[in-house]
Length: 445
Image 1: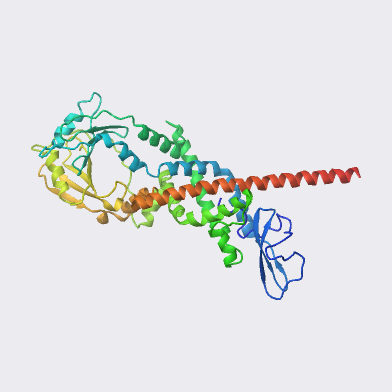
Image 2: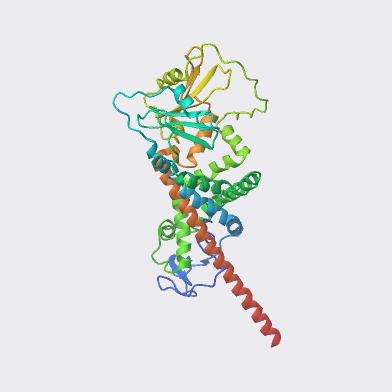
């Protein structure tokens, strides 16, 4: 909820007239010959601006602004707690990649001078020694001390010493498990099975309401009268806001101002993960056609190509296409496949512009296609940008930090917005009770 009242807080229909102002002007005094701006703190709550004009005093927010304000408030109350949950978990996930790399420190091995790595084929055989484990995806790192990573699906991972083939004993995974739980809460309330679909619908709808709050709040944030006095209490903390109510009102505007730009990126990109129409829209805006999902039956396994080149040779050739590669990843080709595609990553794993692909022929050992990021289809480029702009990783550590700060600001926006809404409700209750008491007294009299 990006504003506690309709913009500049000229809400005379909701609050009694102010009894004093900063300059000492009193309501009811004759207007001066020149406009006079007086900053009023009413009931230590809303900061209100009154213009004394030679002919009239300006109050009111307009019908459109009033309707938009109530829609804004209603959307915030309806989705506020879910948005708060997503914001807080977003903060916790800010440096997930770096913290997990730090936790994996015991998997790094300093080789002796002249010690040679095992081949990719040998490392795959070593990984598959574990009962029930069959490698289908691999990650090689350019760093000499980095482990070889073998994966089976999305949930099972093994780290191997690339020089000895030793399978490292998994560490406690305290951080990995923690981040997995936080991510599950962030996306679908930690539900499992079919319940995830319903949970995803709820978080997706709350995210769309968050987008509405951002857009409507941006309009309501605008002061009705543009002066430095009306703007400064919206862009920075007001020392005169010396009560919790005044502080919440001021903070609501300040954090909205500074977080608006990153949030206008973070919020819409989240919709792409929840809705197919949003994913299609990304491709359409990029002037491309979204890829169609294949519903065909699995292909019949074929015989392996004769004289197939080893994966180690293919990986070495793929690495030659980038002098700055940091990791090389690929999925094992299905039986009978003629080609295998490698992904060269020159960044931190979350920078799509630094990821390129090389497709190698398994028989000839020659490159079939080298596709740097800039040569990929516009739709695919846009979709990959969307994925990592949401977390800020696309812009490196600075982007992650900005996304984390924006998420923290979003949590404060929800907190202050709900506080303002609760106070408004309590004032309404008091007025309703007072009106009922007065009516009863009149009937008795």
